[in-house]
Length: 116
Image 1 (cartoon, rainbow, N blue to C red):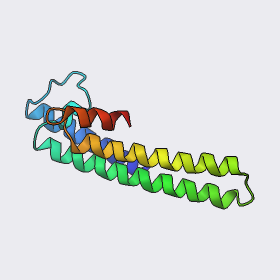
Image 2 (image 1 turned 135 degrees about the horizontal axis):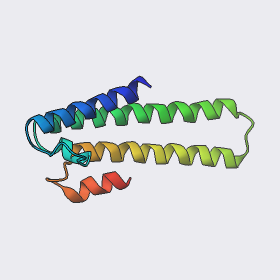
Image 3 (image 1 turned 180 degrees about the vertical axis):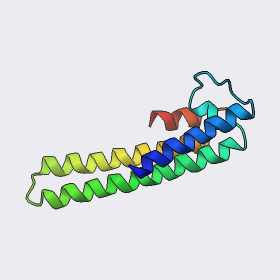
């Protein structure tokens, strides 16, 4: 919960910075637009990278929780649990890609990360 609140707080800070520097219009910008230009791009990258690390930690803990809870589980539960962990890591990596590659610099990698 506190990790999610920090993520939202960081995005709000990026939005306020982008509006104050007149890098974006105040009315309904895309989230990626708020972190396109320096200095808000630095805050945007830091927030998304920290959020991705927290997400990866949560995915790992959930994976270990399911293993502990279902010690006598069948292969289907193990397969689904492992698949969920892999997809979670892919999503966390995509979140880091979105933050690290701004849409104005490397659009193809930014969009690839967003689709992950």
